[in-house]
Length: 335
Image (cartoon, rainbow, N blue to C red):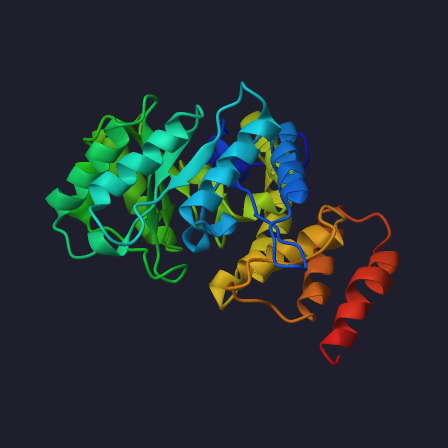
């Protein structure tokens, strides 16, 4: 019953969620970055009421050069103006000391008034728990307003790694870490992270990165999701319903999860092309091009994504969108 709490929904605790959308970095058919489309996405996310994260997996952060990541930061700050905080991936890059690499990246992000999200690197994989936490402590300590750690499943990218329990336990002791983005795609493991957090440090935020279980916000997680970049206004509306204790949260969450299950199915890294296709279908991007080295979906993907967009009320004339933005891509794919 929309507007009131059902008996089932009363078992969930209405709560205010901190929502962060990882914003897609769109490209042009020429292979260059679509800076105008990117800035529109930043503004659209801010206006919806979510915080923005850039240079994350959704922003091809691991495929960009350090100079490109710096330009992304500059465009983000320009789009947001001087006030709002945003979040940005901090990379150590290959070669040299991870500690020094992170310090350089953190200083760059911190200088623009943003919050670093410390992205794992391959050099950390062979470190002990104490060594890894030492890297995070040093990197986070260089940020004036603290930082987030980023736990990424290797199903997303090779540099990702799921921490063992000792590593996570030690990270909770790093006061400069405000929280961690948890992208294991494993609901049970995320619930164990929440339980450990509740026991040791309740102010530490666990930001779900599980685009296949976005209802984790009802169980204590906040979120930093690539999926939120597909439809930030719908995520913001869903969050308000949860805070208000409105059972409409369940209906809207189901529609958003339908989009997540579609866009993030295997191969998972191709979700970024799904995002570009979806934003193009919804007339929020002029094209669906992505980083030249990123995996792509077939043109037939648009059939599924149009269904998702209709369910979310993001297209006013589905037949027109079909004729103009779905059918031509089926022809290109030989469909």
